[in-house]
Amino acid sequence: MESFTEKNWYKVEPIKEDLIVIREQLDELDPRFHTHFTNLYLLLGSEKALLIDTGAGVFPLKPIVDELIGTRELMVLNTHGHWDHVGNNSQFEKVYIHEKEARLISTPINISNIADSEKTIAKIFKKNNYLLMPTKHVESLKDGDMIDLGNITLEVIHAPGHSPGCIVLSSNRKELFIGDIAHEGAVFLPKKKNFPTVIASLEKIIKKFESTPDIEIYPGHEEYPRTLLLFQKLLEGIKNIENLWDSKQKDQFLRSWILEDENFMYVISKI
Ligand SMILES: [Zn+2]
Image (cartoon, rainbow, N blue to C red; front, top):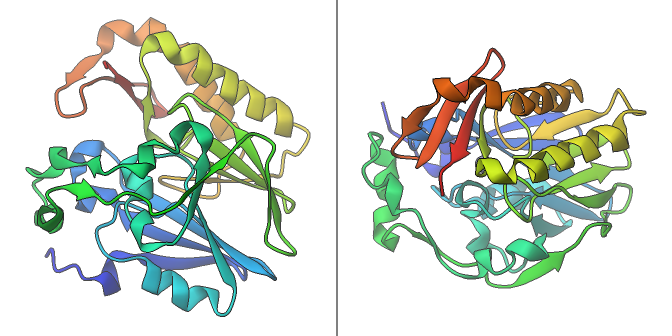
């Protein structure tokens, strides 16, 4: 069954005329992450195109993106520096990321933990010794920066928690591209002592956009678009984790505690 090639690994799905999602199935690479889909978004502005995240790096992404953007200049950005969002960075000349994670993507990222995946496609990384190549040229972003694609503009909002340099992009068309700060399914959280940072970011986003209830939310994993309700449910769930703490299970592979409620699985880092 696992006859993947660069042709069928990525699923390219138009959302709107000028917004495309490129999906890959993370559970086909290694189901131990409890994650089905990673979503990369491509915005086609009148002047420039913006690629939001580059995936795990299983197969080259640039040829697919080049075909979709036509003659537009391409800008590439990472919502944060985790391996499943930056794996194809080295194919692009320049990648933007929040300043707190600029160093992270400037060095190779070790993904040898997936070498013993039950999925044989994971062996594709063996040729590079399970290292994701560093980004050639990294440009730092900070809270409040603006990205101009012509008719589409986006504001960078720093939303740390899932990782220190997580960003959310707010477009002038009531769209929010939120990376991993919220999505359905398995939500990866830092150590419990860092929960206040996670909670503050979720509250900040809810407050900023509560007067825009029809805003479309595009997460880095699983289903899209979602509504602000996703943030509210996740915020409530995280605040309730303490009450479920006795039900936690150890996940050796992820070096995390795992617990669940009716809405989410919470993967809470032990390191
Ligand atoms: Zn992720």
